[in-house]
Length: 402
Image 1 (cartoon, rainbow, N blue to C red):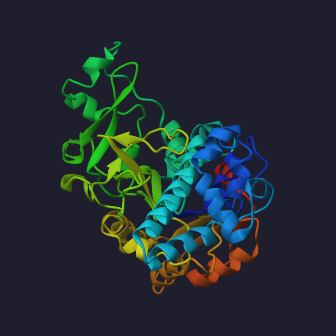
Image 2 (spheres, rainbow, N blue to C red):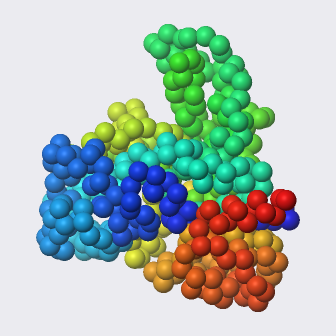
């Protein structure tokens, strides 16, 4: 059955978060419990960096850092309050302070998630799940920021041959022209640069040995005959940790507008890359911080979707998601519970299945009530294959193959 669509929520990552930490999704409620169980984020230096975030939370919720490490805290509520106060701010200084708090909290979330990147391929469940996805090649709709799925599909595709078997002078690496072979090259046979259903204005590539990284213009990268977008993409409807835009330094005291002082040719450029957060400082490029393109968990998301740059990348993805759901015959929903606050997702399903008739529905969720929710949204009147977790789903696939 070729027209298969997967819908992935935070629950799919339980196999990763459970490796070293007892905390499990949903991340919206236990982010601080996860983060503060890690020494990197629970020390004096990091605490000082985001002191105003903790002060803000204590001001409105009366929870200090110790409280946050022991009990749930609703990130959606926090981001929503910050966003509403930014909209209502009457004074420039007040708006600046709120923007900085919002930016620091967002980069804190991004940095913690990025720190789990290497765990995906070590997970005893995620690796076989990657094999399934690579072999099936379905359309994947996900609301997760992380690149765990991309990592396990890369590993499943196996490593490719290395085109330049030599050690390169790092200074020369960043001065010379990038060759056509290097534009074509990827460490794995499956290229994440081609998987997202959209092209990017700048693309980060591995160059030279030991591997360094260079950026190439998107037009140059995607014009290569071997770099065409995959027909069944990974549609990340809330953004991704490796999608960035240029941003002025929001931590500076003089910034009164999010886009102020950006060079004209930097505005609305979308960058596919990587980088390392250090003590809440995001990666930088050309002297500018790179702001991760993430739809933060707020109650009313329309304002974020309506921003010009967010609309540029996310609107086509939501349209592709609608097309995929409208034509798929087999739907696999893993770890997404369709919360009432995400009505835009329910709307997506209701519109997709006003005519489409599914042949098979698989729901993976420990909460059995989600099965009925998905059945109702899809108007599915046949028996559902229900699995409580990813392990049960993988066992189901293995039995089918026998």
